[in-house]
Amino acid sequence: MDPIQATIEQMTRRHFFGRSGMGLGAAALAGLMGSSARGDASAVGGLPGLPHFPPKAKRAIYLHMNGGPSQIDLFDYKPKMAALFDTDLPDSIRKGQRLTTMTSGQARFPIAPSKYKFDRHGQSGMWVSELLPYTAKVVDQIALVKTVWTEAINHDPAVTYICTGSQIPGRPSLGSWLSYGLGSMNQNLPAFVVMTASWSSKAAAQAIYNRLWSSGPLPTKHQGVALRAKGDPVLFLSNPDGVDAVARRRVLDAVDRLNHHEYDQLADPETQARIAQYEMAFRMQTSVPELTDISHEPKHILDLYGPDVHRPGSFTRCCLLARRLAERDVRFVQIFHRGWDQHGNMAGDLPLQCKDVDQATHALLVDLRQRGLLDDTLVIWGGEFGRTIYCQGKLSRDNYGRDHHPKCFPVWMAGGGVKPGVVHGETDDFSYNVVSNPVHIHDMNATILHCLGVDHRRLSVKFQGLDLRLTGVEEHHPVQAILA
Image (cartoon, rainbow, N blue to C red):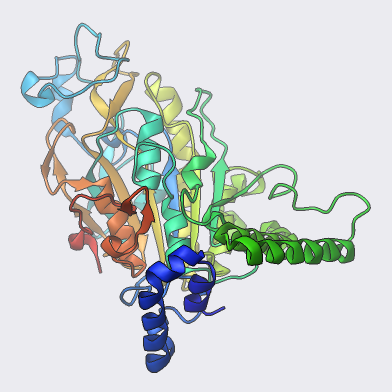
């Protein structure tokens, strides 16, 4: 359906009369200018006028390391810390910053240098820890931002913040905004798909809630659809016993007539969303099983991803499915990998977490690139905050723990819209404060939107008296230094 017509049809009568000048004017302008005024001609269901400018990426894959990966042990090499082992973090560095209740009561804050070796890699000479040998092979494809920061210091508000732009639940997620603004490029699969991978460290992990892929006040058809590792890939995908496809179709046709009757009576846009979701669910009964069947993948591709690709629910399997979703033009895929919350036993847990994701991440970039998909697919890797240079709990040369640290942490991007092989920003010798080019998480989300052709200031929805947008009401900007 034409997106302008769809927008007008989904308005209530009050909205129609309140916005009729704008709606009819836009329709007239589009009629005069042709399809070029309506954005991406291959997409269905987006807003009129989007994308705002030619996008470098058509789709995105977000790899979220939930729990807060330790930047000091992975990407932020701090060699001077070795000489300061077990000395107190200077007050001039800490600067009275907020601490969590897990370490605020400590008698001292002893410095814990990373026990892992770092080396330069690629033509870019990017520093990478020995824990990420596969990622080190593709550093010339990534843009590393070392100076991302957030106001949130605890997991639930922090991950809610980076996914939805607010620490308070109820706002639309990044994937929902992209579905709402740009529409879908595949009518047999959702525009926004989520996977929650298993993890190898035995430590308890933070809970993941479906509000992280919620559509908030946007129509519910824009919320993320979760793929599961066990049973039906999507809940209730299979027909009940005794119900075949023909009977299912008759039921949906009857429900469709009832929903259209309700819409004629009440003009509730959510009724239109329900109709669209029922139809999508019917088409997914064919498309999802085909998507999740990797038996026809070539052996060299399965070998590229590694042995965990054969284990349903693993991060590796999720990355292969993300590539399969990308080649089917799914707009946004998000993979959550839990277990990155190393308050203690860094030496035991962190290597396991890295092993879960390292080869798979490398394989995803290589696979996308050799299929010609990386040029117009944006891949993002990061967590919700970083870790402290000081130790939480018992400190030794061989093991230590780290508390949450929101003032600097790394996020990298690769693919459509970003420069390859660049490092942006710098932290102090303690990886505690930003000394150049700070990047707020709203700036990161503005950058992601920019790569997909969206001006973050112009994508909004009326909600509770505000023009609600992903990047809030304060001034934020895409990180121009990493944009291609």
